[in-house]
Image (tube, rainbow, N blue to C red; front, top):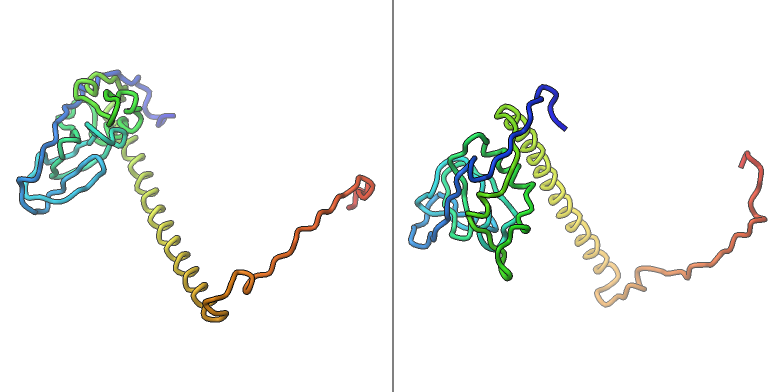
Length: 208
């Protein structure tokens, strides 16, 4: 599936030919600030210095290696998280979309905690379209991601509302029937009846 105005073939590149991979570093020598620090699980804390300023795609070096993240701005990454920079022939947002299609666990290099090396990532082959098509595709996908994020927040609020209503309803029931009541005090149960229908009970009358 493609936008109809684009017909050029996608070109194949090794990841190392379209972007550079940077190493994260320890941040504990830094002071508190407003620069976010990211690990493989996402945001961790904020400090007063940054490793890079601009668009980047993060990918885990160790631990969670299969959940790429996109960020735009000043940031710091810890030593278990790679960041990307110096993009050539690929837009950062499109690189993020590409990274989401890669089975990173396939490239795991450790028998214990999952791990990736910079050399392994750089050799992975990807196919990319023209810059114009990349822009349109990535913008469309980011809009869909944003819509999903908004819908998930709505669902979370509704689930919280449901829990609140349930809590209030049952609190009121406890007050009405007493705290020492059993389920049988507020509900009644009936044994299901078994009923066998024979073929003679069906009518051939088409009006039924």
